[in-house]
Length: 493
Image 1 (cartoon, rainbow, N blue to C red):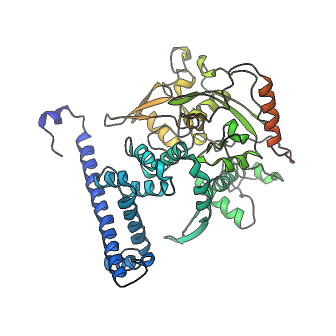
Image 2 (cartoon, rainbow, N blue to C red; image 1 turned 30 degrees about the vertical axis):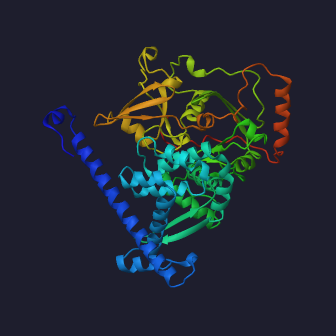
């Protein structure tokens, strides 16, 4: 990429190198495309030869990956995966094929798109492909989440079938690593995986005191071993005789926190609109209703709009999900001059954002700090940095520190949209990804929270129907401490 001297003089320091890196990435992507299609061409050649020898076309070319593995020193599984990807690009995913060939997306991004569009309805494929490829390139994890949302929006009827097929491949594996370590990975239904994850997090926080020398990640790993070997609890390593964990542990634990956002119509079985599993994304209606049957409820009041929606308020946690008696106004409109957000405001911001608002970050909002976009003025709070919804955003601890250091800056541009400025002067916009907003995007199905007047007889009937839907709870719930943050961490504001 060649720049004139005037362009160089007008370009902030660092931009030239960044543009060069982008150009090199595009060249690498085109090289990857050529490799994938070359393997696919070899497969086609082998298939033609097999058919000429009279081999059943259903089995032709099946040994191509074996030859490629020996000739190129590739893993046979990798060769097979590349061939399958090349066939998808050549015969089905034409838009993705063109983007990959032009270097706009790389191999990892192409594989994500192909995997997420596997099983999509043929009549929705072009719409989905165009929507996924629209906008700036995203890293694979963020791209996968975007694909899930778009499939749920444009092809919701395919979700149950796709979930059933994927669940049939569930497994847990152990693979060797270096230095006496091993990898434990698996493929589980999203709700099951989050149940395990939240159980490990709860154990790593509440089974030990704040003086335990292990990191939170180390305690999570030890908690998994404790569950598997029958111990059932972590042993605190603080070595203090006065550690409160030595005085005994509760006989029962609370169920792991699994947060699902589901509209009222889907909850009642009036429609099958997708729900949202916090930390994952859209899930099918049947799975969501099964999770809701044993849950406690928290009402999220949203305003549906043609091109999106907004969160108006979040109710208190309740064991019955009845509909509120009147429209709940947004609490963020009143100026707050206290540093720490109230519980209702914190719930509203987390419901709005869904994830860390830093570009491409996937940390769930429940694990994030609440950052004042304009810093809070501790000397004269009324003069700036108010604790209101429009001045708060969810940032994970890493990116919160990055913003505090001044390396990256950002501002609120309205409707929950944030505009980040990179150290090189580039502007990157991020938008809220909370379930409450995701589920209000341009659909006529979502009617459950449009209660903008006083209660009617129909609303009382809806309360009654919801109560009938829920199974009675047989165990009592005792008060539990907040598990959102590790002991000893400062308030996340």
